[in-house]
Image (cartoon, rainbow, N blue to C red; front, side):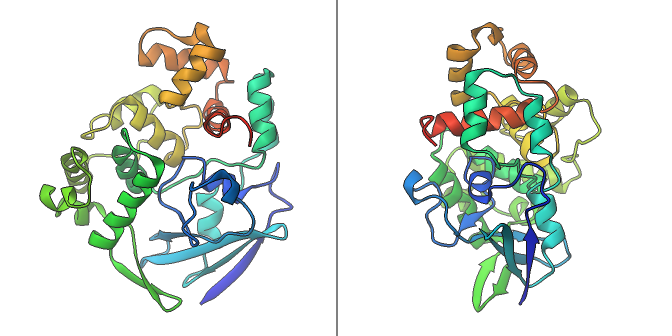
Length: 299
């Protein structure tokens, strides 16, 4: 087993692992103690988080925790470069916050969860997990992703235990709708299979380089992907930091705090909210506000 330590003292603006991984951005990580999102008061401390990666060749498990001003990691591979990328450790939070509006809601959100970064998840896992997220509790979305891993993913032995890598497009495209429904995916089952099939057949998923709104439109070609899911993938996997997914929480935020941004349709409302939240890094600010409000604003 390899292990290492990433000193966080040189991360601009600092870093908080718990907020980053338990803020609804990613369903591709899980807590070793099983307490993901279970209770606000169980948050924090030095919990271990796990994920799998194919970035360095063969599937591998990565285990990481935050302790004594550093990220401590264990893996079968040298995972430092993967963690730096997946956790966006080069992001300058001070500069990002400086681009945000000075209103009370935004500043309280930043103060409460300061150190939270956006994630940069693998695009395919992000796509499938957000397809599964429609009208689902966070805990159930996590359970679905674990079921997909265990049923279709490649086994990976790590520290004496067998885990499973997240399924590849080919592995999910080969699944039947009945097999997916048995995992409680319900009406999402054909969406998952057909979207995996599209990726396997070469439909572009990595749309980086396209203008933002064009990229969002491109992702809606996948089955079961509307504008909100497309924005989630753009923001949490593909580096479009201006994307602002308009989910239930953010629409309530618009109603209460930014009523002038409501334009009667997704595209124009999204444009107005992006401008209100600072433009280039509006998705960062939106994620802070989302996490703050989802936890009743009390941290």
